[in-house]
Image 1 (cartoon, rainbow, N blue to C red):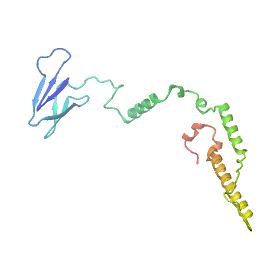
Image 2: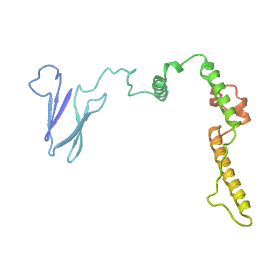
Image 3: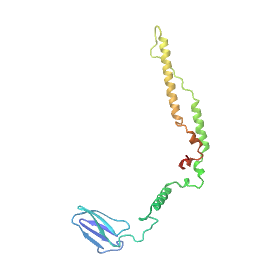
Image 4: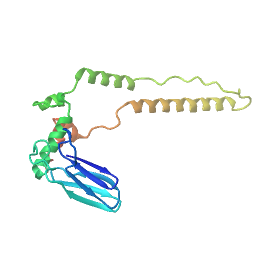
Length: 194
């Protein structure tokens, strides 16, 4: 069925695929029609007008034989839960769906070894040397002591900056003993033993 709103008149056409000369039903309102929509699986047409909302009964508008596998308006809680799980499984990539849970938990060893070696190399790097040239040469007593002190300060600051950069590249959190003991990635979803 097709519902059309023009001004303050709503017309409903049946079998509009073939040539129709006149409307199946017509209803006239006092105020202009704003919006209209059929209720799914029912013989009701909702019409919003300037003065409010009206429900029109249109015999034969509802789908008498709906497909409960496609959309079930009378589904129970368990059916709704099952449909939700099914829709979520359709979103998962097919490569991740497997009967062997160890495939998902497997670690790519060559790339892991490369990462570990790169981190070890970072730990053994020496900070770059800093050449300190004072802007003004010190004259008189204690001048060379001030230059040496300033040189140490600049070198220490560069070492701290280098250590900070290396620390950012290393992993931030160490795993707790419980995490190290767990044998499988998916074990975190199992209930904990008390």
